Image 1 (cartoon, rainbow, N blue to C red):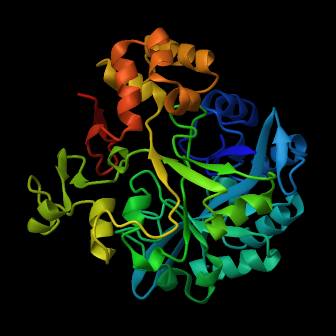
Image 2: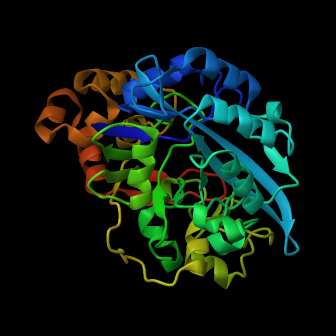
Length: 402
């Protein structure tokens, strides 16, 4: 079975999230994108969990659920904030379960550390990362915990502002239970391959979407070929890094991510790692401390050269959302432009899904229905021939198709 899975997104109950992030709109967005397995997101939120229990039905695949023609996996994200070794640590964790009953028990445990109704991604205090894993896996051995967007400066396991230098430092005696790491928008698999310490874990890509629009939902995803679709089969393919089953990851070029380069948004300063280091990581305009980008943080921890590929690595295919391909290829460079949305939707209707447009449609087929600059931009994405002004300090990168 061909499975395209986006296992990290948020509901309408999370901060800074579209009011359309309900099951109906997310399912519609998944169909347009070409996804057939989604994480529910936010199962810790009482109102969202109530809706999940009311609407989701057990799927044919054990441990999964179905609604509106889409398969769903119970998922959530929590933020732990605590002191360790004299430093404030802020780490986000993805949590997965195969059972509504288990989620109810997880929420009961987590409610002791924070107010779950405050946000779809609640902040937990009084518990560190290792204790969190011990508590959650103590409820059920089927519970999976994965570090979220592992390199984001502010809230991640390797974050430059509040993270750690290794999984073992973060998760301590529970680190053996961590079998995968989420790359996040500002890093990709090749960047993570530069750390030999990560050879023991798999990598995953998910969108962390706050909107059901196809330029957010599924912009990063995981592609499987499975004999059967179930909770266990998905995570077995990940855990074992079985390249016959876990076929590839869909990732945006990390330069597109909001924290790839080091910089200072207020002053419009974007710097490569060597440039930032030459300035002692201080803004050359105002002198304030720069936000260390993911690329620089990887350079700090890497023990392998750029371009190293470990044996048995799951491949990556770099794509950009179709809307942004059309927009930047035609010089519009703005979101929510009706003419671009109309062109995007027409291509999706023609080929069945956005991923079919981006991955499968031939040049000849595309040329029959799309403008020449759009066709050339889609082909450039497939061949990794897109130039970027890298993202930095919360600013998205800008693609160039010239």
